[in-house]
View 1 (tube, rainbow, N blue to C red):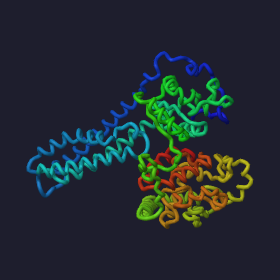
View 2: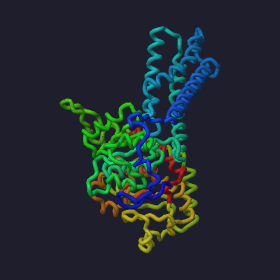
View 3: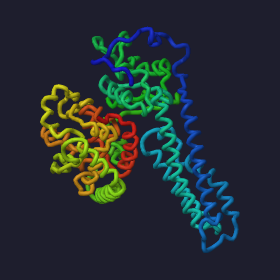
Length: 514
């Protein structure tokens, strides 16, 4: 865990010798600086190897099935030559198609779904190209070969990318394979970017300095002679006026710019960084609006952001509803022996029912009964008042204790592995909950909501969600709300699939489960 920052802004003073470079003259022209990110090239080579192996395995499987007498096909190919040629050339074409579709661009690697989308798009385009080419050349290639090779190659490539991302994230948690980031912005916007980087090490950001985006005032706290102070543990290294010097001194490879910077200053910064190989990222004021809702609309030669309304109804919602109920129903059938066993364990080890029923608030403010395996003693609600002083959530809307004495021994095991939430699958089947969504709130919480927080109730609450994969009980109230609102603003089936996949690893890590 990173050291806890001191309160206030700027933060505590740091060792002046540690940042002596801030006042020293550099030996070379700062404009000759070139960013060096060697690990990115090695990581791309690893992904190229994964993609090539995925295609080799898929065409090998397709060739074996077609010619290995595994399946008795009615027609036999006239010649195996086209298949041999395709088996040899397809892995090269596969990697080339990925490259042409920019699936190896480093800005898409390590996070988000864009990398996987480009892999699938590359596969689809190459499949169409092979189909058209085989038809135009009258090549005798069986459809069964193509139907085996390309889908399997796509699945294996996605699996390889997932494995590569897992390796990258593990190395980043160890402090390796990081981008050295210089944050440029006003105090609060810069602090927000620093907090986000410190909260999630898998993002790959190592913030090495902060440049203020304005000249310091005579009485301000960000004067150059006070650059021995830090912002949340990160040294203040100057302003945007001496950005090149700060980049060279900190060996930064990325510059992250806050949304408050005016257009003229931003344009000069971009001009100054041309040819330096330094990536420039500009934070939007709309931090929780992403994906297909944002597009560029030119008006009178000026590029403007067009923001679509969140799609909370229509065909996509019906597809989500059908997906939720089908998956939850299948999961109940598959896990029925586990559900019965856990219910007996709860019932036989402490007095009370196996299923705990609690009123929660769902979509549109309607109340419903949520089901969980009982993990506390039956008098837990009565004992809550005497434990209020030990609440670890200062804001008071949620009650959380790491060592809650009301939890049974079996309940600790259930919570540790999130097994107490399995009965919520029945809530998904009856339509009161979704597989993915905001956290289901209590009526007492909703009664104390501020106006903006009510947007959490615009969609069904979920068995899992962004809050689940981002820390769960370790999250502060404001951060939990921000994640729920981000889901409401940007939800999609693709996002649901990603959250469900990441939930598996969040449960295995057991972070915030208590």
